Image (tube, rainbow, N blue to C red):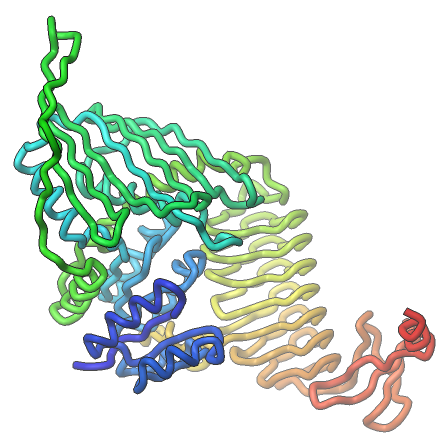
Length: 529
């Protein structure tokens, strides 16, 4: 089986994944946001299908799995879309930003009988396996402490803060090697040059076993340092990736407590290098994923296995960013439900019994009436009004200033059956800026409602509606044109020019509908400036 994987993202880390997958003849598709930007990679890796359209990948029957290396903020949404499309998923860390989020993704993977593996490359490092062996053999004695340092000069503006971009590696290692619950966290963040993301974090942990540890991670540091030190009563182990070649060093010593209270240290003369196989960790990680896809076996770093580290990182995040837990800048009625990973803009009001599902984004100064359902992963622009009993399903997008009248209906499945699963075939419906949908209007999926268009009450829209068009009836048909203000336009010149008596505005016909004609005074002012 060859060329059955799609790579999503070809940035710095995505390029490394592309090399490893290409060497194994596993990758067949590459998704990027701009083909022009990656011309050199297209030449270096011939025979692949490069695309900017995700629907090509979701619909490709011969694509069995995806490898996600896009910006971290996109990971949960892409994982869900891939699972719904029936693909196995490998996703670079982090796969999610909360315990609830990762559990939902794991449940979806189980429901779809698909694999979901997180990309924590250090779990597949041969030096880490050797370190695990030292612990198992008791070479360090009783573990008492650990130190981790991960630094380097980041790419500004940062796409990830020092917690989710750097420290997450060491949190994952601590959980993997020690498998002990964290009892106490003391974390501090520094934002020296960024306004929204911490470039540096200090994390102090106390484990249930009594082990104390600290993690220092910084994007604002001139040297690239990668080091984990485990400290026991009979020795230390230092795993370092500071130079070109990783190393693992064991320092033997012995603590003796005088009178049971005062420790005396008897150190060894020098550290002992611990040998381990020369294996590229990323290659080992990808080989594991490919094997899991072939054999349908559970990955070592499955979503379920990563729940503890995601939960720990979430706890630290809440401590680092207490302002995120501050008073809301929007109103939510006590009977409404807001899922995790939802963004709601300032000044928005959400009323009785409404439900905003995961991954949804609602803009500023919106009003959502009673019994409104939004999501999952729906986008609503600024200044929208969604009146009672409206459901915006996956695939629906509202631009700024859209009005949805009471009980208007959206769909996302063109050929619905209760007994046939078609989530990977949901169609997108877009309502553009300033459009109005009347009460009980029905909008068939896959259509676009144009800018400032008006759909009459009870209309059933089967096709795209042009900008500024007025449509009514079942099926909806166009009966006129409307101004931005909502007034019906008066025809000045047949099928060409239209006028609004209220606003003193003139519109002309275009292929998309109508557009405003600049007034002479507007043109004069433009020339003066």
